[in-house]
Amino acid sequence: MNQILAIAIGGAVGAILRFFVSNGIYAWLGRGFPYGTLTVNIIGSFLIGLLTEALILHRVAIAMEYRAAILVGLFGSFTTFSTFSLDTLYLLEQREYLKAGLNVLASVGACLLAVWLGLSVGRSLFLYADGVIRWLGVVFPYAIVSVIAIGSFIIGLVSQILLHRVEMSLEHRAAILVVLFGAFATMTTLYIVLFLIEDGYTIKTNMTALLAIFMGNVSLCIFTAWLGLLAGRQI
Image (cartoon, rainbow, N blue to C red; front, side, top):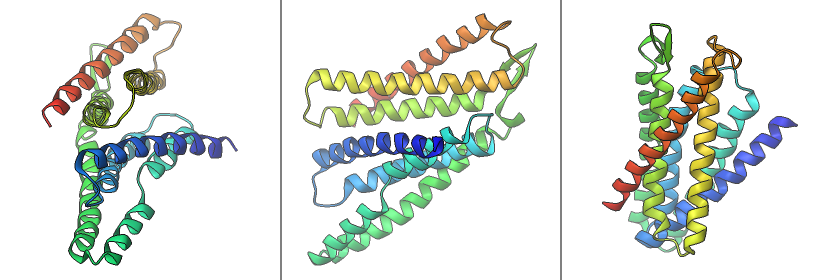
């Protein structure tokens, strides 16, 4: 039951994110082609490839419910094969055969490429010493930190592009950004802390180090998200 509930929560978050991203893309590029569906499928494919490497193949001892919430719930509802199929059928009914064929080729080819790219990036990050640098008693999980940096950059980039193209009040935009970045920073910090506890750190004797890690990860998320926001302004 806990796993089902976790998947349901992850699915709800993924569906909301898909709604904002796809509609933002359509508001930006128009509805002459299924740009929104294609975009969410490519982004989701890349991230599921990247996070499969981080959460499954090089996992820490987190409950299966949380992995299922992210990989099955969140990305399962963020990406959408059914909408892709419906978009393609509508194009065929409208005799837009070229667009329909292009949608099939772009969706299948680009999503496979995105998954391969995500897996390749993840495997490359974890290639050296399982993604961990150990020096003078200090443990630095550089691979996990890199995955977090990539994720927060993508959040900043997509947010900058879309929030200025979706009609909503300034208060709603600010609330979405705060909740999104806050949840991401909190969950990724928890992941790092769990990794370090599994590696031998204890809350009782390493409280200062764990607090420093918390502040460092929050700062990393803010900085890389800011870089994403800057990059989004150039698009």
